[in-house]
Image 1: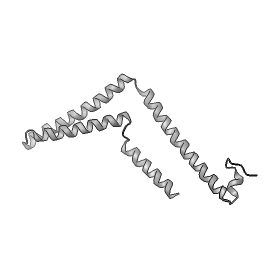
Image 2: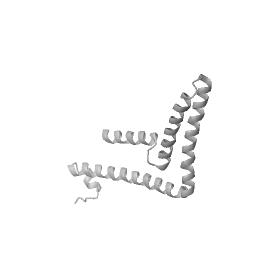
Image 3: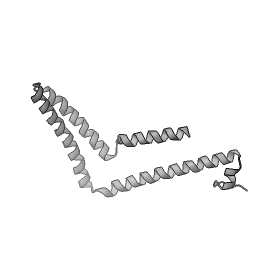
Image 4: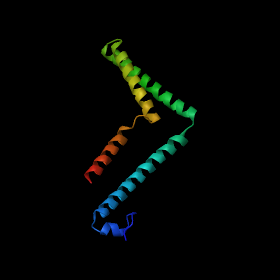
Length: 128
């Protein structure tokens, strides 16, 4: 008698149910892994810092991006003799970098490494 829980009888059977049971078990394992990672990330973000500390972190990352961009622009202007052009361009680039850092820290934008790993996992799943 076969059960719907993926017992050994279903897998050794050779019937279509055996393949379905095995694929279902693989899918359940992958979903459990994904849930564990998401729960770990949620616990980390909730317990890592208070609201004030999080606000200070986000604001400092934004200000750092703007200041670094302005500094690079000022140095480029002094070096190449292009008075306001380098400062304006790099100030805007610093602003964009600051916004991107804030979005990454807030968890709105996914890190590139995590996105690449997720895409590789999806490709591996399709090839199986």
